[in-house]
Length: 389
Ligand SMILES: *Cc1c(COP(=O)(O)O)cnc(C)c1O
Image (tube, rainbow, N blue to C red):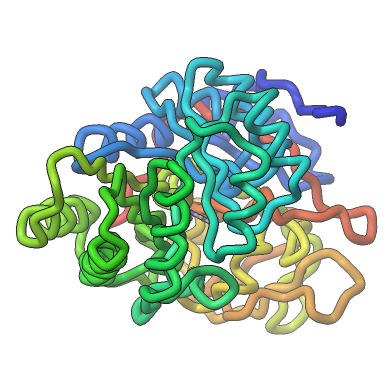
């Protein structure tokens, strides 16, 4: 297998204004503000009461992984050999967690033998057999639980995850095979209620107790929210306090390591998408990127992922009346429109530059070049990400 990766070195600009001055505007440009990544990594490393890994699928660009590694992240939640190679390249001494519940035997064997992976997730007995057959006795088995997704935008417990009784059986079997075990869950992405984490921790403990096994770790997963324009929830610190408090009240053993594996919360605020207006037609604005490009995740998340934006170089429009515009992307596909309207000044016009913020999570990974359009050029911007009140 050949792991071709883009260069880690990005073109750098002092500001988005400098980028615009140097651009022809033919293609959308994705912007990364490394300072934003460092701040988010710091918040987790200093605030989460346990070990923090990064869910690589959320943004696997080598520059993102490298910056997170430099900021102190050394644990990586990976789901494929390509992700393993990408994480290993920036963090050769880091710890890799193969946390996809459905894997090929070959990928398990390669992960164990070639990449030194010692942590594997399963959610049923059939997958457990596969992992037991293709790894040695020093590989840990984590059982993924299905937990309630009451307050999340995306459900991550229907496709995967065992019930507590099922998890109990898998834990007992893994323990019986001489393996060290742990439990993980995912409360759903963009989870707006810290309670979801303590409920999952309770269920993890119940499964461990019922199986009469020692849990080497409880992994509370990702799901920590991004604070988008329409998001209303408590700050990240409150999530961390809630999880630390649950650890105490549930009486989780001191030698059970608590872990988390955020994707979105580590990277969303560091990424933005610089687009250009191709055409204004009545109440519709056609942009040079859309839902098949950098806005891909917005299509799935809808109004819950309402984006903030900056209209660059149009200080004249600042005091102007606005109206809600339909936003179309550049492809010939009729589905290529944002799921909500965006308020823009009534003088919005062809050639204007609009930067959409908080797009560091998922959008880039889901981008296509459908119709030969869109782009995933990523550049670094030295400024800090804008602060939104
Ligand atoms: C996608 C994913 C994550 C990251 O979730 P976020 O909601 O982005 O924090 C973590 N763990 C697993 C197993 C995932 O599939």
